[in-house]
Amino acid sequence: MDFFFSSVITLCLVMDPFGNIPLFVSALKKVAPERRKTVLIRELLIAMGITVAFLFLGKWFLQMFGINSFSMSIAGGIILFIISIKLVFSNEEETHANPKEEEPFIVPLAIPLVAGPAVLSIVMIISAQQPNKLITLSAVLVASVINSAVLMLSSPITNVLGKRGLIAIERLSGMILVLMSVDMVMRGVSEFIQGNL
Image (cartoon, rainbow, N blue to C red; front, side):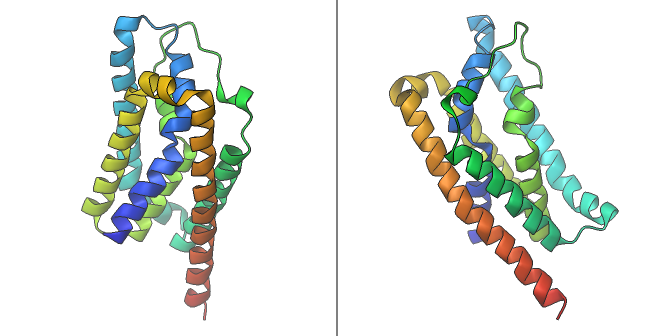
């Protein structure tokens, strides 16, 4: 159960739903109000499908390229660290993207805002570390549902928290991710040392 909860928390933090709220609001600004909910649900389902696909293809991907699990753990930790630094020291102006005139489809909402490289890397690491696919699938689905729920409520959350509140939550998530990324790297180094003694 510890692995399940830590996987859900890690995925939720990497998906960064609170940090994505301004981007989603901006991207959907040009979409007709009656279409926004439909577009949002569609994009979230696509992102979930891609994430689940990577979960099951992760082990095959590692084997095909001859990548060890400790290498993925170290690489994932480095990616997490870079993302967390960006979250902690993010520029307010960078948080908002210019909305496109057309209705967004897959890019940029599903990919890379939800199912981005960091999320897919973490999913592959989880898949490599946990042979029980039911646990990993449950963790991915729960994290996706939490992420989707936050983004579906983006308008009320924005009204309640405001821009400053969203930035504060994003930076707090970044601080937590820094600690998790260091732990992930140290775990990978430990596995490497044990495997080569």
